[in-house]
Picture (cartoon, rainbow, N blue to C red):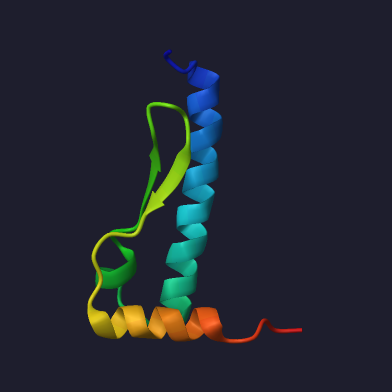
Amino acid sequence: MAMDMQTYRDRRKEATEAAEAIRAALAGLGLPESVWGSVRPMVTHSGKPYVHLGMVRAEAAARMAEAMRAPAEP
């Protein structure tokens, strides 16, 4: 079943906002654009929003993991 255009737009907006949040967080970690520049919003044929992170170097992935383990700020 094909998704209607409004559903696609809504899901694309959701994926785009999430991708932008990830890009900002990675840039905030001091990671170069070569790491966060490949982050892309995606919508599947069934209408599910996703964020494609792409391939990152091990050192960047380690910094990302460290940031995710950090306790949330009060």
